[in-house]
Amino acid sequence: MRFGVNILNFGPGASPDCLGRWARFSEETGYHFVMISDHVTITADVQATYPAPFYDPFTALAWIAARTNQIELGTSVAILPYRHPLHTARLVANLDQLSGGRFIFGIGAGWAKQEFEALDLPFHRRGALTDEYLDVIKTCLANDIASHMGRFVSFAEVHTGPRSVRSPRPPIWVGGASEGALRRAVRYGDGWHPIRIRVDWLRDKGLPRLRSIAEEEGKPVPALCPRITLRLTDSRLPEDQRVAGQGTLDQVRGDLQDLASLGAEYVLLDTYDGEPEATRHPEKDWAMLRILA
Image (cartoon, rainbow, N blue to C red):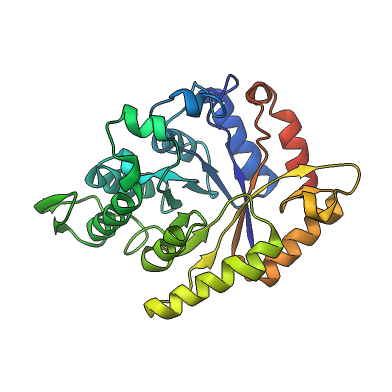
């Protein structure tokens, strides 16, 4: 099982220097990968929790790639409807090349309705857009010349180079826990990337449904690659009042052991507690991550 750090690329403390410090800390402390989140337009619904300044994930990860050596880099998650899939496919291939084959492409359908409206995108069609865009992106990443005729996107004989380092493409992690997201993970993903989960829900509902869908679709079950909220406490939290990653060190260690027993291959640790001002002082987050490491 590989462990990663969710870098905070937003809020009053975000800056190029801070992004670099987060990445260097993660690599030097022994973590295996880092990921950052995605928003394009910081509308009121986004600003309330993930305020500006907000650094674009693809640009920021290229910056981070140049300042690290071995750690994997990814998006948790890139919102596919926000960008034309031909553009996204090129960003993915370029970033995988620039990082020497270290990129993980985490994707999602999005949740911020006002952001969709600002971008003149149909919020109620975000699932269908995401599915078709994934089809386009996978086609582009696997072929030197690509064509597609679909409901939302059509093009012919587009040259896609340069190709990504990993063949035929970087791994795709699909976020979300809805029925549509689970089916999307099976149809298009190499990994399933749920966030803020409870271990008992994952064991009793999430993974059984994922396996059932995979059997229906005649496809392999995608790897389990969750993102959990890391919050260490001095005293034990009641089991019915916490999600995976919250509680004493022993409770969190138990969560990680449970995730390993469920077959998790990657676990992303997210230290953000919903307080934007805390982004000015990442040392507290680093202390937790150092203890866990």
